[in-house]
Picture 1: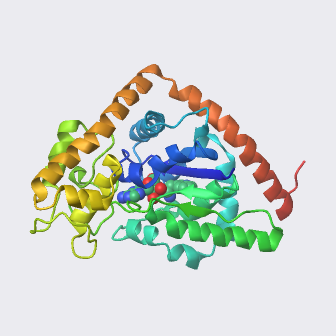
Picture 2: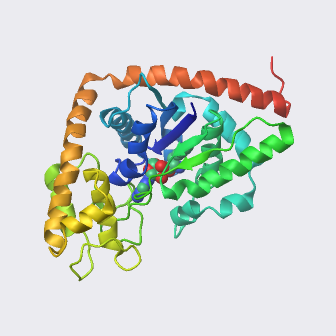
Picture 3: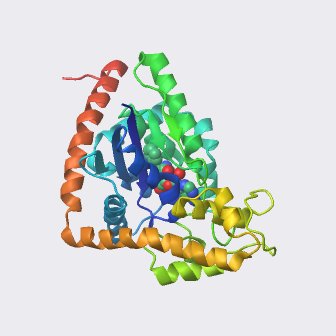
Amino acid sequence: MKRVLSGMQSSGQLTIGNYIGALRNYVKLQHLHRCYFMVVDMHAITVPQDPAALKEQTESIAALYIAAGLDPNKASIFLQSHVHAHAELGWIMTTLTHMGELERMTQFKDKSEGKESVGAGLFTYPSLMAADILLYNADLIPVGDDQKQHLELTRDLANRFNNRFGDMFVMPQPYMPEIGARIMSLDDASKKMSKSSPNAGSYIAMLDDPSVIRKKLSRAVTDSGREVKYDPQNKPEVSNLISIYSHFAEMSVAEIEARYDGQGYGPFKKDLAEQIVAVLEPIQQRYQEIRRSGEIFDILKKGAEEAAEVANETLLEVKKRMGFVVI
Ligand code: TYM
């Protein structure tokens, strides 16, 4: 049995990109391995957050985890800020990280581009992410394609620590879907679908009303052709929609292409909306029940206790090896 860890930032509403790239795999992996899934609220504050919105988003994502099928009796579900070892090992990892390594991170470059002032936390973000993973000595990290570079840095930091202070950390590997590790925006297939986008038409949120989902898909950008064909190079928009379809309908690309052969984009986009609604509607209903019941707080408390047990042990060992006075 392997150890699995992952998390999502509470910086907005979860999108179908988060669902396809990561959350679906969380649900799958909880049946196979020892899993830790958190909401990374401390990463969310690396860009300014309104306090009321942060609280709402954090609770909402935790409830969506459960609504989408995570079982608190199978996986530990918790908030990053509830397990103090994250902040502490995060600081330690920052001291092991080189400036040049952080400067190379494409996510930092994207998020800081054109901004007048950028918080130092946005820069050191990957060191905290490394701490998240190493605290649990996780082998498998279910993530989308955009996190690959952060995972490479995590492995470099794990190696650096092992070399300086003695073997302790395993090398974590990304676990990604074959298709859909990078779901693109509905309005621009050169950009990743993102929950922090200011244009709500560019993404489908997991909590979008069915009527909104239908409208967003009917407006999704496509090329001027009419062939439903998976060809990311020449038909990036349609290929992105096919990837989404494939996940929601659990059909292969070839089956989808055959189904819409000669029919044009209209019926394809309409059916895609219905496939998404069919999966999301029951999740949304469960989500409302979970929010109403307030059960999420007990789940998060139990999850944090389970997580802290492992995390504190790792942190103590790290501190001993580095020469901190431990009494
Ligand atoms: P975040 O919050 O940006 O995204 C959460 C997860 O969703 C995946 N994802 C996507 N997958 C496919 N297509 C997309 N358009 C798309 N957008 C997002 C992300 O790859 C991610 O898996 N740094 C992380 C959070 C984090 C973390 C960790 C992850 C902090 N500590 C430790 C794993 C392990 C992030 O910003 O994810």
